[in-house]
Amino acid sequence: MSGWKRVRLDGRARAWPGTEREGRVVEVVIQHGAADIAALVADEIEKLLAAKPDAVLGLATGSSPLAVYDELVRRHEAGRISFARARGFMLDEYVGLPDDHPERYRNVIEREIASRVDFAPGAVQGPDGNSDDLLGACEDYEAAIAAAGGVDLQILGIGTDGHIAFNEPGSSLASRTRIKTLTSQTRTDNARFFDGDVERVPRHCLTQGLATIMSARHLVLIATGTGKAEAVHQLTEGPVSAMWPATVMQHHPHATVLVDDAAASRLQLGAYYREVFATKPAWQGL
Ligand code: F6R
Image (cartoon, rainbow, N blue to C red):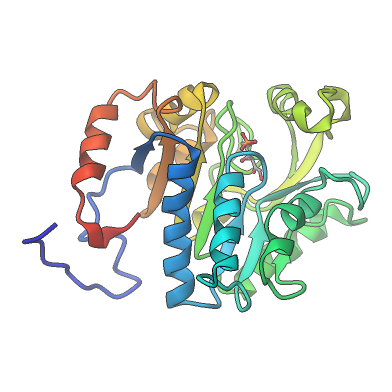
C-alpha cells in the first residue's frame, strides 16, 4: 500500500515484536478455493527459494497440500523454481506399513512432489516408521532437522479433531518427535486412503511433536471444506489447549492459516480477516 514505509529488520527480530505484522495470533487468509490458496503458498515458496536456494521445507501429506504440490510442479516445469539445493522434512509416518505400500508417507511424498521436481537424491527425509528402534529413529530425526538448520517453511494440514502432524488431542504442547497412537476419528478420516477400510489404517505413527513444528520459521496451514470449519475456528479463535493441538500455533510469531470459504464458515471474525488481507501492504507477503 502506498504511503507505508517498510521497516527493515534483521531475520531474528523480524517476527516479534511485530513491526512487520499485526501481531494477531495467526493470520487467517480466506480464499475461494484450493487453487487460489495453492497460488499464494507457491508464491511464498518461490520467493523463499529465490532468496535461499538451500531452504529447508517442511512437507505434509494428506489431501490439503496436493494443490500446492501441483502448482510447484507447474512452476518447476516452467523453469521458475528449482529444488536442486533445497531439502525437505516430512511431518510424520505410519508405523509398520510395508516399504512398498502406496500409503506409506515416504512413498506418498515421493509420488506427489519429490519425484516430480529436482530434489537431489536423499534430500527429502521422513521419520523411519519401520525402524527396529523406533525411539532411536525419533531422536535421529530431531537431530537431522537440527543439523539441516531447522525448517524455513512448514506446510501443514489440520485434522478434523484439531491435530497437526499426528499430534492428537491431549498431545503435550512441548512434545518432540515420538510415537503416537492415532485416534479412531483420524483413522476413520484416513480410511479413504485404504479403500475405505478403517481396519487397514495403522494405529501407530511417528510424528514431529508440537514443539518440533513450532521451531520452524514460518508455519503455513491449509484447510478446505466444512469438515475443517470447527478445527479452524478453534485454532484461530479458541483458547490454547492440548485438546485442540493446533492452537499451539497461536504462540508462533509467523503463522499463516489459508482456508477456503467452507473452512472459514465457523469463524467469528471472518469479515475482519477478509478486510485485513484485502488491504494489507503488498510487501508483507504471507
Ligand atoms: C499429514 C498430517 C496430517 C494431515 C491432516 C489433514 O502429514 O500430518 O496432520 O495434514 O490429517 O489431512 P487432510 O489434508 O488429508 O485432510
